[in-house]
Every structure is written in C-alpha cells, then in structure tokens.
Image (cartoon, rainbow, N blue to C red; front, side, top):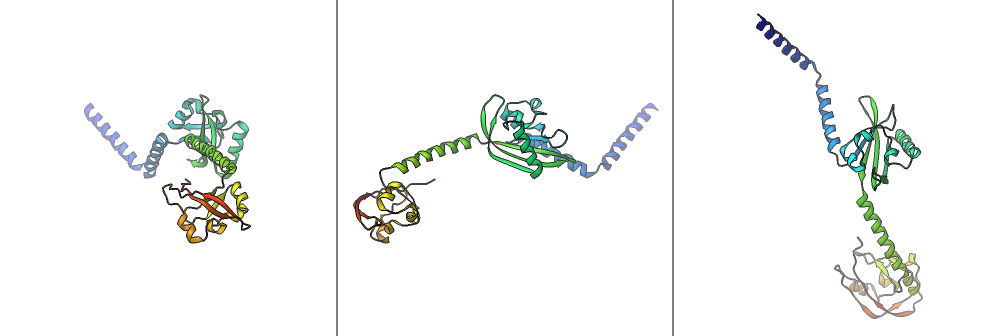
Length: 260
C-alpha cells in the first residue's frame, strides 16, 4: 500500500513538472539562451568591458570582464562600485562626471587615444567607447576599452622620424623636389630649390620638371624619370633655367622612394 502511494506521488510530481515545463513560454527559453550567449561573449572578449549603472548609482561599475581585470590589475571586487576616474580612466571626478553627462545626453562617446593608469601605476594608451542601452527595463552603460599602446607608440616614433626628415629637408643645402610617382608632378620642394629657381612653392606644386626648365621638353623629362627599385639617374653638368630664364649648371640626381 505504501509502495503504491509513493509510486503514485512520484507519478504525480513528474506530471506536475511536465505540466510546468509545458507552460513555460518559449520566449523565456529564448531569453535565457540569449543571456548565456551574451555572457559567453562578455567573458571571452578581447576588449576590456565595463558595465556601469546608469540609474540609481549612476556611473558606478556593476560588472567587469576578465580582460579588463587583467588590463587594469584590479580584482572584480575592487572594481565593483567604483567610478571611472577612480580606476585611472579620467584625471578627476569632474572630468568623469562631464563625460557621463555627455553620454547620458548623446547616448555615445568615444576617445580615440586616451591615457590610462593601471593599479600598478603603469601608463597605457587606450581607445575608449561607451554607449547606453536598456536591459530588462533598466538603463546601463557599456564601456569598451581597447589597448592601443603599441599603435600609439608606433605613431609617436613615426611622428618623430617625420619631424627629423622635415628638418633635414628644410635645411638641406641641396635643392630637393619631391615628385608624384605616376605623373612626375611636383608634390613638395625645399627652400633651397625655391631660392635656386625663383619659383614660389605654390608655383612649383603640380608642375613637371620640364615646365620649370630642368629638361628641354616633356619627352626628355619622361625619359629621365627613375623606375621602381631605387635606381639612380645622375645627370651631371645639366643646365637648369630659373624663372627669369637664366641658365644654371647643376647636377641632377633622381631616386625612387616609397612614401609609405
């Protein structure tokens, strides 16, 4: 009798659970699946992601993915409840507050090159993108932070290199013209060539060499153009004419260079 009762109760429970599962809306399963996919992306993303409260504790961190924890050196517990300025993303509370106000107003902010200081005091350069959206009827802020330190350092080195080149170009005691590879038209000229030929920079830009008296005609100018590969074409004892028509003996050397 007891066994019959237990068996009957078990069947009743199974029937009840089956009935409940049948009555769970498919939309709930879809929502749970969506949340699982989002969480997986959040946890494995190769960008640092912070989720901030946009309502009750506006601007306070609610969640952080593993990448941002590794990037900044803070534990998840240390990040929760902090504002961005407290973890080195803005210089002070006022700057952080101004950014949050702009975000709330426009729904999106972006900083292409932003200095960031980690918990250990290391300085890194980041790209910072933030936007607002609604989850379950609650407004939140998502901040994506990408480490661009390598890219920023490359840009600084390139900028320094270009500055050194420009200084040499401007002070060289040789006349230097930079030509477009395909057309042979002048793109730039240093002060020495301007003094030598008597043309202004604006007058030189867009002209071919034969038009400023360096060659007899277009045909001769085209024949003298260097080919790819850095081959040199020295023309010694060449007669160049300045804007006034006066002939000047000069040596012309051309070289093909890649402009990057």
